Amino acid sequence: MKSVVVCHGDCDGVISAYLYIKHFLIGEYPSNTELIFTQPWRAHVDLRKIPKEVSELVMLDIALNKEVVNMLLPLTRKSKVVVIDHHVSSELFVDSLSKSGVKVVWSKATSTPRLMANVLKLIINPYEDLLVRVADVCEGVEGDEEVSKIADVIKLSIARDPGDTNFLNYLIKSMLKGLNISTLDEVVKRASIAKWLLNKLLKLMKDRSVVVGDYVVTTLTSPESRIYAGILGIASTEFAKNVKSDVILIREEEGKVVVTVRSFKRNALNICKLISERLGGRYGGHVEAASATLANTSLERVQLGVLEVIKDVRRRSII
Image (cartoon, rainbow, N blue to C red; front, side):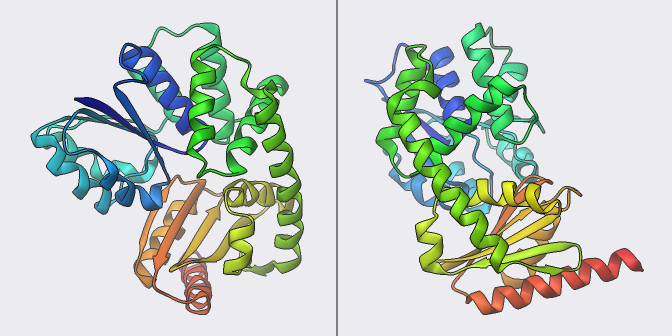
């Protein structure tokens, strides 16, 4: 039976998959290992792709929610299930998964690769250590100039089209060969296009932004979200740095509205929780960076809901 690795299709998720394969599945990859790349908001959907019979299921860098947990629990009856994650919001589900026989490796680490290196006691070489530091920078940690440049190129190249699984597989195979990822022609080309799109999006977000209390709020329509899909998370982080304020991005997508929060005051996860509770949806992430996904609702309703949440938070802080 095959091993299945499900990982977040972003910078630290891809590096996590590389590390897990290198240290635990190198004899089975690629012939007897299936890789599934996903995003936290649709992980429960992509889990349906898992074959009925697998020897091991590994979840890497996926923020847990009720839907994901409900998909995982039945699999524990016949397969080994491993969850390795550093998202703060996943803590709610650690005990229930552990009691059901899932091997859970969770901690508030700077990145999932850093968590793996520290908790799993991986013996890593200089190349792997560099990629762990790259993953940290991709997740918001300040790094030296060299590591930051590498992280930017890799992060942007993935963001160009995070649904391109062929490219994500190419990255992992290149890492397994020990190649300098940030200098590969295809990586550089994709990063360059993503950088151009990022600059255009940052200008749009600035032009569209309004100040509401302690937050700068900006909104994107469904067509705009499609154009800039993949770089929205990066743009939210960069926009927050540019305006030197906590930021809320409300974007309309097909069948849902997504709210992305970046907070220097470490309120992102709480804001997303409150938005999700008020409007009905799921949320996840970290205290500095989080998101809420709200299905079957309108952009206008979410905009009003976000304004009410900001008012409530401000009112409570004053009282």
